[in-house]
Each structure stands twice: as structure tokens, then as C-alpha cells.
Length: 308
Image (cartoon, rainbow, N blue to C red; front, side, top):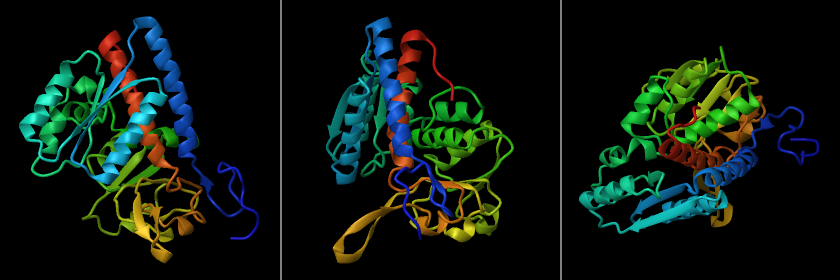
């Protein structure tokens, strides 16, 4: 790369993609939510409450959960942490969820995945009251999304959509490809893009020639967890690339760094705009968790909710 590096991530250097500033967007969204929380309290004397349940002592999950609690307090909401031992049984976990479902101080419930041992994540997720399912992973909210009805949407796809609508604008008629078909990101992402009027292709482990399909995409969302899967040959010149993946890989001297599913150094010379890793989609996930909690509180207290 030649020439000076721009100090503003919004302004690309010549021949490089515009960086999509997910961190900045998430900060602004959190500020807006904090204002909504204050106005909501003024109307009802109720502060939205988010319960986060972590089973086991996975260090990465603990850091992530504590960051969620920090951001919850930053938005003026109440945070209720439930740190359970790895020996927690299915019955004990379901009993806790049942108590949280009827607790009037709790408006959103999130069970941190993956769960250890023999705990059934599907049964646990579907035990959450759909009105408090701020992860949007239960069958009720998933079904509402598939039918184009309002509901709570998984946080990471929602964050991707908000970035796309901000940076691209009107998505109608654009070709979009989602690489990865997980219930957490890929499938709901495809549904959201369909709702916006995109022509959507979903690539998965059995897809033939995904590179050929990807090169036709105006919007490329990659969510596989496979670091460096998508290189420059996959990307249509000028496309918008949303890299959901995040992996820690070794570098020199025993150190590590965070990378995405996209080979950034190649993609940034081809794409029109791209999310960096870190600082792209990651901050949006937590901001959208707060957004969903505010939406859930409105529905529970006022009987109305937002739509995406």
C-alpha cells in the first residue's frame, strides 16, 4: 500500500474499500437506546432488565458475558447475571428460566451458547418466553421472521442489516449472498435480506462452486467461523462485504491476533466497502442485544414493539 493512511475509517485511501465502522455505529446506537431507556422510565417508572445466564467457566464466554453486562449498564438498563456451575442439570437450568419468565423486573433473557455437557440448547432456548427471547433464537421468533412478521431478531444478523442499510441504503433488487447457514447468523440473515427485497443465495458446506456464486453478489455476508475462507477471488469488484467471523490465530513471537472469515488484505483492494475485524460486526451484536431488550420491554409494558 502506498500513500498516507487516512485517519478517518469512513474515508478510504485510493484503491481501497471504505471501512464500515461498526464500533462507531454501535456507540451511537447505544446512546440512542440510553435516551429511550430514560424516556421509558419517565413514562412507566420501569427500567428495562436483561438477565444473562452463563453455565460453566469458559474464559472467553465469561469475558463476553461481562462485557454484555458493562454495556447494559452503560445504556441505563439493569443487568442480572446468573453464573451457574458446569454441573448444572437440564432441570435446574429450565427451572431458572421459568423463574425469569415470570419475573416482572426481567424483560430480556439470554442464555450464553454453547452450553456444556449434555444440556440441550434447543430445549433451553425454546423454554424462554418468546416475548423475552432477546437472542431471537426460539421457534416462535424464528417463525415470525420467516413469515415476515415483527418479532425479536437474532442480534448479529440484525446488526449486519443495520450496517447495510446505513452504508448501502436501499437494498431492493441487489444480489446478496450469505456464506454459512447457521441458525444463529446465516439463516436469519438470509430472511432479513429477503425482507429488504434482495435476491438471496445461501452457500453452505454442500454448495458447489461458491466462489462463482459469490462473484455475482453485490452484498457478501460471510459467517462460517473458518478464518481466511473467503479471499479476493470470491469478491465482485465494488461489492459490500460483511465479515461476521472472528478467530484468534497465532503470529510471530507466540502472540495472537483476531481475524475474520475474509482475507482482509486481499478483499480491501476489491470490495467497495468492508467491515474490519475487529471493530466491525462484533460491537453491533451487543448493541442490538440492548435494542432487542428495549423492544421487549416496550411489548411487555406497553403492548407494542418495534419492527426491523
